[in-house]
Image (cartoon, rainbow, N blue to C red; front, side, top):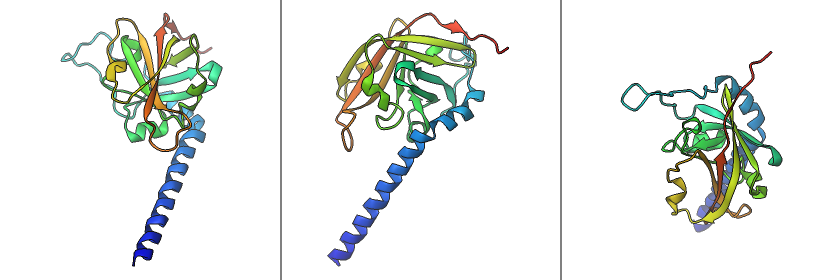
Length: 199
């Protein structure tokens, strides 16, 4: 009886492991196709601008695309989806909903898995440029700080007086299983540039 239980448990673990590998592979290798699907539905940077809470402020639905993040030097490019639940992080980079949207200023926080969309962050450096694009604007950020923190250190989510982008992923990058720390990238925004209309 014990042997049967061990065999069943071993089979279950193999199936679960394969499912995780397939999901990660789909997310990693299907990102270009997903990005192309999401691009036509990107919002404008004035999405909800000028409206305060209680006055009909537009909210972004969970799982909806809010933009594209790119780090040219690292070859990183991914759609950013609203929310940081399992579904959002499977299909792209997630925007933590309790932080401001990037075009509103303040500390916008993005998260993604270290073994999928944020794997290139292992090579990021200070002064690297991060781009965030909506349907009508592109915002540039410059990396100012890199650090490793415990998962309980929530100060990285604190509001900032200037427009800031905070990227979060698990650390170490090559750790097997649930990683013990978080890798944090802080970047300050330059002035936004409006997109040129298509010719």
